[in-house]
Length: 253
Image 1 (cartoon, rainbow, N blue to C red):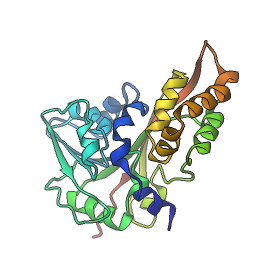
Image 2: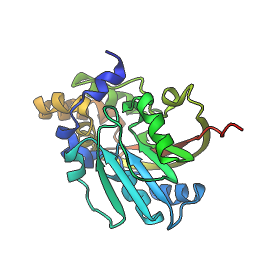
Image 3: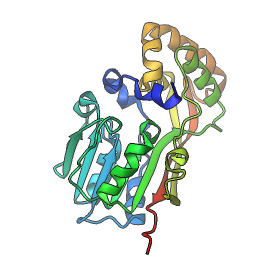
């Protein structure tokens, strides 16, 4: 079984209620992306692997409509809001041919491209005729001094999914789709031990192991992070919201 196959088998129904612990997209990212991709009130954005809606909700104010696609009913049930220009599609993009009945001005994939089978994804992109795909996400910088300690604590209670095709290089390799524009927003954020506990619980590879001994994980995390506290019981780290474009192959003449 390949690493991607193991990821695809993960249970996202159980982790949906913990997705609020995920890092939020930093302010200004979606406005900047909307400007770069020239979105307007006539544009349609398709969000593949929408989860609890961070990307769909981020783009909704800048376009006419958003088509949000996910295989998990529970993920869709945990959206914090549902704007009027949103349409849900419940579908497993790796298991079936999906007719989204949309033409997309932009397809966005937030922290999910490593779950998709490229043999299914590329025909879907052709079907919606999108000129661009934006792979995006928010992560704690690996250069943050305490990031290694945090990752080791998670690994003791589950797995840390490395290396992953987070930025889509493997997915789009050999497809004719080419890297295009990129954007990046950075900020320093303050985290408590509880903040990072909630963040770890939002990953299905960590969820079961942590829930079996939540108090033990919290103690382990506090012990690991104490040397890095900048204020009582808090660490400060660099957070990056990033986006990488892949552009449709030029039509052959």
